[in-house]
Amino acid sequence: MTVLLEMDRITKQYGTFTANDQVSFSLHEGEIHAIVGENGAGKTTLMRILYGMEQATSGTIRIRGKECQFQNPAAAIQSGIGMVHQHFMLFPSRTVAENIVIGKEPKKGIWFDRRAAAKAVNELSEKYRMSVDANKKVGDCPVGTQQRVEILKVLYNGADIIILDEPTAVLTPLEVGELLVTLKSLAAQGKSIILITHKLHEVMEVADRITVLRSGKITGTMNKADTNVEEISRLMVGRDLVGIKRRERQPGKPILQAEGLFVRGEAGKPLLDNVSFHVNSGEIVGIAGVSGNGQSELIQALTGLLPVDRGTVTLEGKNMTNNTPRSIREAGLAHIPEDRYLWGAAKNSSVKENAMMGHYRKPAFQKAGFLDHKRLNQQVSEWVKSFAVKTESIHERAQNLSGGNLQKVIVAREIGQETPFLIAAEPTRGVDIGAMEFIHQQIMQKRDKGEAVLLISSELTEIMTLSDRILVMYEGKIVGELDTQTATEEEISLLMAGGGH
Image (cartoon, rainbow, N blue to C red):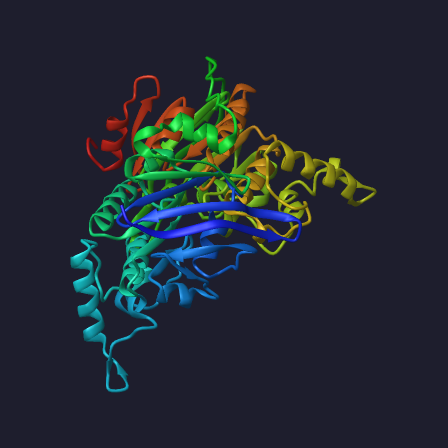
């Protein structure tokens, strides 16, 4: 195969920290090349250098044998490189067509030609078999469609090399399947794709070659046919993963009980429709469902962030319906939120300040009415160490952390609350396999100590690995309850899609 791109001995240093250390990487025409590695391994830094967002300290980039240096993304785009970022760069109030043609708008005289823009987008979506409605506002499109818009925008700009940074982090299982089909189709039509991801089953499904990074260095490049998930995992984390050991234990008394929860949405359509369930001590109850079927509203109703129109929520026998979030937390609820940026962290605050949220009122962290910073520093440093959070210091701003490392800070903070009940919503979203294993172990330990966990996840394998019982949500209702010992993935998927209900 023809070599399209070469990155030769790329090194990137930030002061004394080396993010990329003599990294060499190549991409063939029509190839899907996955770059995998733990959070902070240097994957995104390498791609930011390729896309002109960062400058390498040393090393060279060659496209079709010609040496290139990109001072900014515009220069990279001119050389046929496009990047789809993890957090989309779209204007929600603008149409799909307007977002795609921005910067290269078709004109009629001096005016923007909307009809020509829509026509160009329709032709592009047909050519690459990526269905979109050119005239729909992006803000009204589901996440999977928004991602398609990002990919079409890159194709509209003439990209031959497409970089996708953690493209499935925000997608439902159905949307993930659609994206993987799209990537294969693009490669078959001659496009070359660099896929940055943690999710090894996706890598094994679509990649032709795989490069593994650990601590800024390459630990291996191999053809997919010559490797397996176990070998890639070992190269990523530097050790064998031990997996989850489930201990048999009898669940105890109910810790959380929800009875007939009803939350009305716009135009009277119920967001939660007569939802009843319980979580016992020593038990993990998983909630499966395609995103947007009431899981978010259920979390918000239980945590006091959304008013309940009818029904009751009790925590250890105390009625907590429509109480304030603070009083619910003080009654014994900890909460790993589904969106770390929206609900879980203050990006402009330090790692320490984010980690102490909810802890600073505790007597253990106070001294004569003031915060005991020595004790807090000690506690946060312990969490950073045990959760392997990659940060220069506990005083570093949270926004400088990778998404996965910020997630680890939030999980450490909430499990550290040591409450009788934990809501774990998408607890491993965007984290690498080493961190995922550790977080799973922490959640399982909580269950084994006799505490109760409600797990909400769009990852079916996570639900099936950790849960004792599985509830399935569809259109604001609980449409099934299954025992993990006997449940099959097909059975759960059918309920998630509204079948059998």
